Length: 614
Image (cartoon, rainbow, N blue to C red; front, top):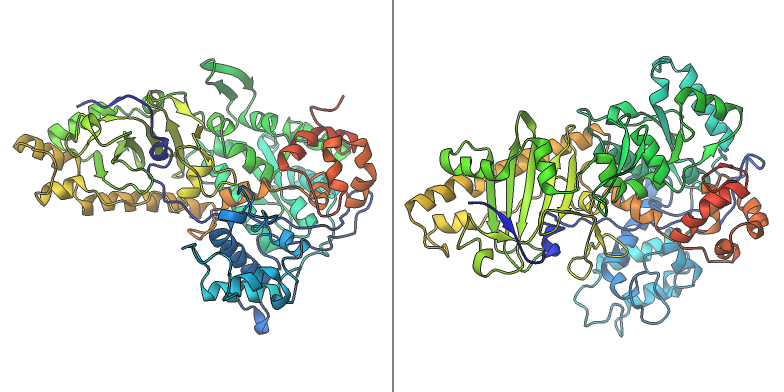
């Protein structure tokens, strides 16, 4: 009754074996404006949009009948994404010139939306038209009447509206001074603890002109991710140190990040780099890491023992929520077999024991329609030995339904083509691994086989894609095999011993649902302990990840570089030619271009030191 692997993995199944895709949408980045830095430190941003266009909260209507523009903007963005992005999204082969339908700012800038005037806005007119509407009548996915009314109200009351453009500018000197005061003067931080204290910043979003409620999802993403990269037993949310909740303190010991950081290179099968701790590994792989300079910065560096005591939180989410850093921080080994051995789990022995004595430590479910693959699927749960609060799930996925791939004919000795693994971390959060037909760890699923609809490029990546789909933990799926056997509808011809073995290994639907609920509750308790709202249509990590990858306009660039838009425009000629488009009206640069140029620009602007500095 052993499980073996063969042929080519159908990664549509292996990458998404237990996934139910969520509704994580791209956040729209703000448009143009000005800011301030250490030399020009009081001027706020003129306008901003994003995940919530103003500072209100609640339903579609705010206080005194005023529209909640944050809610309306989010709903409008979802409507555009669901109904229009197929033909007019950033990754589509757009018809005509519109390939920015999920960028509300671009719709305004390019005249498709006239703020305050729905009937003069081409977007609304085409959606509301009875003749030749958009989407075309042949499309089955269409906006409802309520959707069109939402778009009409957003254009009429919220398009171009901002609420926090006059945020008082927070300079990098102020930030470093706050960190120094927190580190050296906070009673709860002993001298012995200081070497383990580190900080994350969301100040650039505030300086950019975003309101606090717009930034909330970034706060949630930070807390959820650091705890999803933890090998410690408790969930510990980062602690804000400032009244605006923009600078967060962590103790790297809370996540086992004080252990040495290593890079495990699959191409050579061994460790190729070692760092004194995992934070240093993260900083080394983060293209936005800055060594700040100045007296206060030197005091902080001396106390913490690191040059990189502060990281930009959304850049951290982007780099650490995907391989290779996701694997290295969690120390996920190169093979499924090594992972199971590290947990003390012997899959084959556990299965045999379940068939022989039925100790209820292993449970399987098999079904015809997985929702992500044309073929059958088996999912299997194992208890962790000596850890009642942890479980290990593995899927078995097939390239066909014929021969030894037909689990409904042979529920024991089938031959799977690949697997996805989900397991509880010690703190109750979940870790993920995708493996090929040999059990070898892989980073991305081939896009020609499976796509992540939450990712702009469609690629399923371990870590962030899994977190996005498992926003509420394990997702239930009713078993077909045991149910069909009990109803005398099974495909196989089973004797009494085989029927007993099936009933031992494949619990009833009700019993299996109890296990699903148990593990989902455990995960959700951990998420709640991290201070992250449960459920919702926007998973924080995926939302922030996708928003970070949007093109960068000059105002955003200036905020991330700790300088003003005015100063950045003046000095663009001294920077990489790749950043020239920052100086052009209504344009920006691709995020990957900006990332590649960031370290050198920080040196040229004398903001701090990076690996690009002489």
